[in-house]
Amino acid sequence: MTLDELKTQLLQELNLDDTEENQSTLNALVEDSLSFVKDSIDSTANTEDMLQDGMFVRAVKTLATQMFYDRTLATGTSIGLRMMLSHLKGKVGSNGWLR
Image (tube, rainbow, N blue to C red):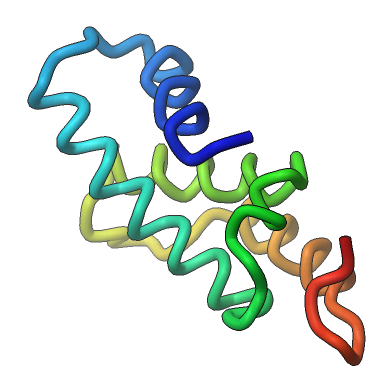
């Protein structure tokens, strides 16, 4: 999956109109979420490789969705996201992200 495909899917999953404003907001949220999730797992890994993992993509979408509805994350991240991050950390070996 590409980053653009992820953003398009999230726009559809959130049932948002395909407007410039919505795209701009989602772009920022996805970029921030991608950085957060990737850094939580293996900051040195190749982003394109990580985007091929369904759980990684779901974690990015989950965080972006949560930030869409609560920009300040006033209650922190969801338990589901933390579970996904724990699962994904298991894919990191001594040489980094496992493909």
